[in-house]
Amino acid sequence: MTQFYKEAIIDSPVWIGAFSDKDQYRETSKSLFKFFSEGSIGKAYITDYVAIETINYLLRKEKFDTALLVFELFLKSSKIEIIYVDELMMHEIKPLFEKYRNLSLTDCSIIALMKEKNIKTLFSFDSGFDKIEGITRKENV
Image: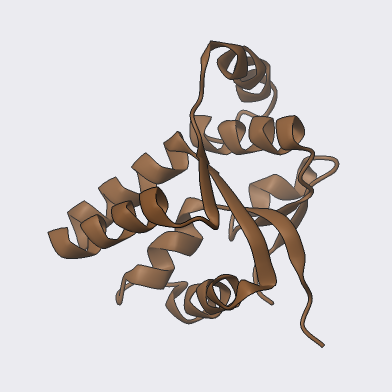
């Protein structure tokens, strides 16, 4: 029986791997994207930082059309919600950034989003999240 997640966060490398033929996580990312596309994740949340990181990476490493495809997916999919980092969220991110010195600003925006939405599941290949209490990081399904 397939696991169902009502809500989850999906990190940049998962999106990148799903759309980049050269990515080291290509096969796993494709499986995760299929899992998401088939409805096993009800709603995926990303911050605008994740969207920018993903699209800019694809723009540099893949074709423009690939970056545009993912950009449109983020904007048009009813199953993906982009949460924009605002001033209030930025105040939540700063102490996280100071505390977890090996995590990027984007990673800290994910932690802040997870706390704000009370979401426990994160699909990510970044083991840096493993030390964050209350987060269950999944690399595959």
